[in-house]
Image (cartoon, rainbow, N blue to C red; front, side):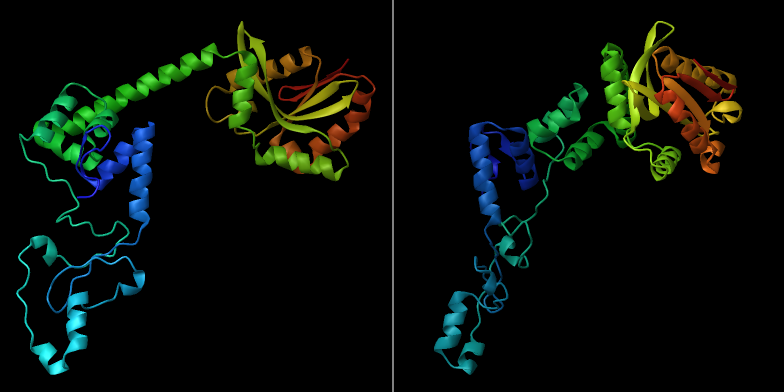
Amino acid sequence: MRFLGSCEVCKKAIHTYRGLGQHLRFNTDDEHRALKTRWHGWRATYRATPRCRKCGELWEIQDPNLKHSKRCPRCEGLRQSMSRRRYESLSFDKPSDPRQLMTASNSKAQWDGLATRSLDWRRGGDLYMRVSLAYKGGQPVGETLREQAVSYKVYRSIVEDAVGAGTYKKQARQRKKARSVANIRKAHAKWAAMTPEHKAAEIARRFRKGSLLERKLASQLRKSGICGFQMNQWQSFLFDEKWCPREADIKIPVGDGRKLVVLCDGEAFHGPKFAFGDAAARIADDVATADAYFAAGYSVVRYSESEVNSGDACRHLLAWLPRCSKGVQLYRTWHPPVEKAV
């Protein structure tokens, strides 16, 4: 069939058009790209093979306006050249080719003369041995699919026949688990090798939308005439000789290059009602975060969810902003309740 068999470029065995597509996807040299262009051009051309209702023969058409034709050109010529009675009395031997007994196909893939579009393999055959040996040798699945130009469905059916469905399923779970562990270790090693600035930038990229609580306080500030602040700004601080990224929910400029950091705390995630672990450890971490911002020269305030929802947080902030603009550095947390200014 067209484009099937040995690849025109590298002579690799191509069994199906699905395999051809996969082969051309992973081979990107100039020769394979040229073959891919020709293949796509061939697929894009309208092509169908109807079966004549009179004689049973197949003929190819490339004009979509002819796709509903009931007679081949020969029978259509006979019909036009003789009387209707004589034409209807004509009989023809049906074709013996099994491919020609197929019904017409006008599918997107187009009829290509294949009796079946799936790949037939047999136990002990050449393809069977190559796939099963690749599996037993530990070759990655994707690499085998590319090398043998087969789909995963064919690959799995061969391997399950070779080693048993239960064995394949068990080994597949083991490989998936090992791959997950390896990927986690790589991710941890990559994170450990990043600089504090890169860590902060990466977290900002992943978590930059902000919570509903933060957006609510920001909306209250804008309605009160406070604009020009930034949201969800990440930076790293040193805790116990380790650089850790921390997020300022809102950063408000207060003049002379100084800023006030606002931290909005959902009460299920902060404070004494912390629901996902040790509340004392969580509170200590929140205090350490506020201390780190304060030590870096920021004014810092932590507000609880209740304070934001009631509007107390916005009112407290509006009362302090004029003093901060005059050089006062504010430190305020809702739990433990601390408020001081220097």
